[in-house]
Length: 229
Image (tube, rainbow, N blue to C red; front, side, top):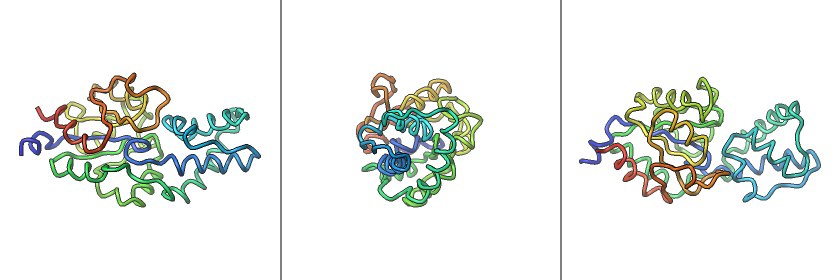
């Protein structure tokens, strides 16, 4: 009961790609479709994972650079538009929640926490993905970069997500995997939990989370330690 009282009314905000869901297979597959259309070699999955943390446009730019064909600025948006069409149609071909994720979210809800998604992915794509994985039912709010004044690491993105779930930054946590999450949490004065298995170009320990977890079964206790006192 103490844990339940400790999280009642708290908002736990989550990054999506690389934190809740392993989306890399479908994101990199779509990048490789673009590369193939341009006559370029595909990028291996493990090479592409770190490109994901800053959003799809960054991933496209980094992917083409890695393929030996750096993009002029005016080429990025047309490629991004093509990316979105293919990705939306294949958004959950191979993407899956990380092991233990759904059970941990259900436990947090049972302990009184409200849950929000705070992602640099577009809101519409985020809801399509969550619907496909039967995860939308777990969240009180889904706020993509297009639904906030500015994307992470801007603090307003996180603050918007927390408010949409009915909470305040003084009683909230951000769970993420990359520098954009760390920046938003620090700017908003919100405790930060990072996962060790996500998509980051910077070693996750160097981002100095308040707590680093390796598995989702560690998450409820981590949240209670930060907010339950």
